[in-house]
Image 1 (cartoon, helix red, strand yellow):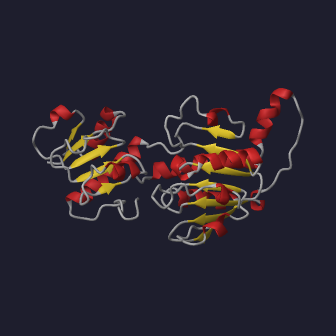
Image 2: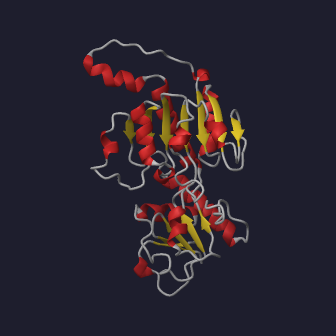
Image 3: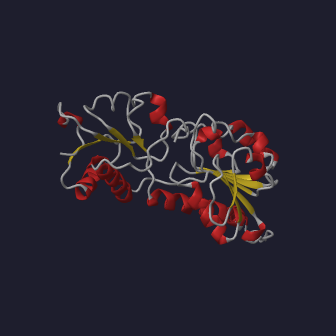
Length: 308
């Protein structure tokens, strides 16, 4: 029998119902007291407490509810030979693309500016541009960055996409290793959707932001640790950036005393850009469990050398 233990801190009962609908033959557990000594090959986790994975007997596969898995790799709790499967499903990609488009279009069409001056009853039109007059650079061409870049290009933005591999994205100009500065130079908008690895930590600093066109927009839906925060604030204060839309932070929840809450050029959202949607997520995990049971390769297994 297939045994699955859901160690998520969210709605375990809801996930249990979805798994049982996808895999009627499986035993799906949500209470650690029910595990007993029998092997439980599959564990579903978000950000598990220390010792959670090691406490489950006979784990063979760790199924992550998140696209980012740096916390699982950093903990050292998952043995090197044990596969970690990161969450990649249509719901995540759709949600992230929607959020990126919302932030970019609100800035591009001056909607945020007009909203700010509305209480002053001030009629103050700004110069309006067409999408084809803007350069947007997306960092990351994977499961989240690729679709977001494709949507931006479809609207008409002059879209660039940078990744280590230089992966092509329909409608966008692709840049690869060694071309980061070229990809960002002159960009009106910089969107970060990279995985967090040793190579990408602190990648977005004052020098990189300084290559953008003056007065641009920075959008971060990936991880807070990608950004040198002091450099970002300095770029905003100096006018190099006119706005930063931030969904992720080094410390989450963002502490109430953090000055980013009150910065006039920062939009804060509480890590909601691409929430995991239970239905498609469970369908994807169940499909990978079937593959594993049938001896077939699973999809989206983390490459530990790459970090994602």
